[in-house]
Image 1 (cartoon, rainbow, N blue to C red):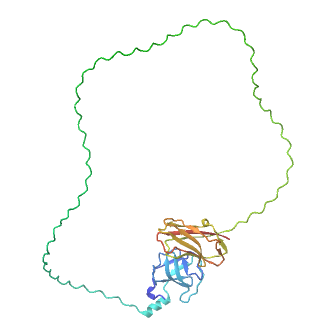
Image 2 (tube, rainbow, N blue to C red):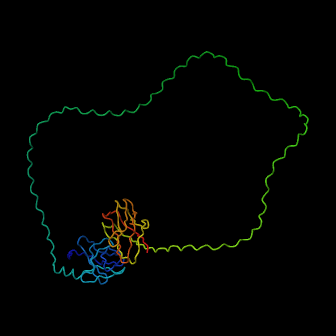
Image 3 (cartoon, rainbow, N blue to C red):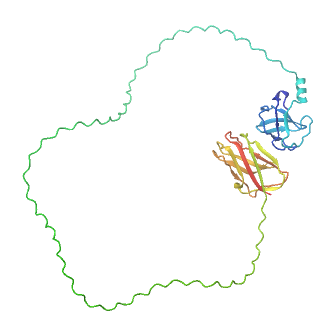
Length: 346
C-alpha cells in the first residue's frame, strides 16, 4: 500500500463524471483533469463521488485508474455528471500524525580554498632525427583543357582578277504565240424533228392517308399472384467514441457494459477507426469482449485511417458483457486523438 508521502494535492480540484460509473468499474472518465495533481509511480490522490471514497492511482488525461470503496465506504453506481472532488481523508491525517515529520536538511558549508599549483618539470632530451624519406609522391592528375581563344580578325580582300573572253552566241528563242481565231460564220437551216423519246420512270409514292379510328379496348386480364414478403430489416447498434491525446502502450482506452444482445458486422468497411495524426510506425488496436479480442484495427505507417478486420463468424455480444478497446502496444507518440465506430445488428 502507498505511504502517506505518496499522497499528492491540488487546491480546489473539482470536475464531473463524463459517463456513468458502474459499482465494479476500476476505470472512470471525467470531463476535465487539469486542476488535479500529476502522479507517477506509487503516487496517488483521493476523491469523493457522492458517499464513496476512491483512490486514484493513474491519470491518463481524462481516463483514471482507481481503487474503489476505500476507508470503509461502499462501492456505488454513479451517474454521468456526478461531482468529483479531491479531499484529505482521516486515514492520511492519522498516518502523518503517527509517523512524525522529518526536519529540514541543514545548509552545505562553503568550499575550501584551492591549494597551490605544483612546479612544471624540466623538458626531456630531444630524440634522434629520423631518416629522410626517399619515396617520390604520386604525380597529380592532368588539369582540364583551357577554353578556346577568340577568332582572329579577317584578312584583307585580294585584288580583282583579269576579265575573261566574250562567250558564244546563245540559242534561238521559242516561237511566238498563235494569233486569235477569226469571226464565226452564219447559222445554217434547222434540221427535221427527231422521233419521240421513251417513257420516263414512275414517280414517287404519294403521302400516307390519315389513320383510322382506334378500335375498342379488349377485356382486362386476370390479376397476377402476390409476390413473397420482403425480409424484415435489422436494427443497427453502433458503439462510437473519441479518445483524446496519445494513449500509452496497451492501455484500455474505452469500456462499456452491453445493455442488450447484438452481433458485430462481419464486413470490415462497416466499421471506422481513424486518428487526428497518423502513426510513425504500423500500429494495431483491438476491440475486446470480456477480455478477448474480436475486432482488429491496423494503422499502417503514415496513414491516419485504420484497416478493420473481423473474424468469421463475427462475435455475438450478450447483455451484460464487458466491451473494451485496447490501444496499440508498443505505443506511438505520433498517434493522437483516436475516433472509432463499431457497428452491429440487434
